Length: 235
Image (cartoon, rainbow, N blue to C red):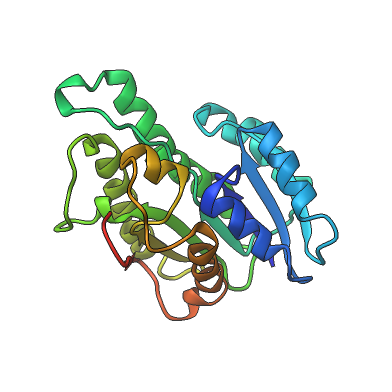
């Protein structure tokens, strides 16, 4: 399978790529703005049977996705089986202290970047036999779930991603592409530590990555247009 994963410099994205690289049938393009972390990831996966490619790219540069990232993707892939929109940006501020720039950055990385990526990569997805797009969201973005002070910008941007997933499934219902969102609960990542200092989550990044890997490979057979909670606790 030809796979793109964003947000691969640490945490769940990093571990997901490591798991995918263990299988010889996979060709993975790992995307992150962190050059150093990508090189470490490449070294960690050296010797694995899967083919790993790394692509430094800052998803906040939305206007460059079609002009800079797409050519890099086309250099290696003529079709795309799986896209995992995992990159995320946390803004943790009281509502009254949020600046317009905070809102723009949060919406840019958590919502607009996945949307622009999907739109840009549609021609490659449509060339695959059973393409699957997985958007990684948060339980904070699920209506009716418990909410926390300081996370209004982050949670609302993730909620928008879930609704877009439902819309895309409806719009492309006659195509082979499947669109789903996984709304994750607590996982022991650096982002969780930044949001909830001192809290210990019930799952480690590698454990959640194993679930996402299986869902990415097989979930499109059973789900489309769904926002699926994957949570033991929130936080």
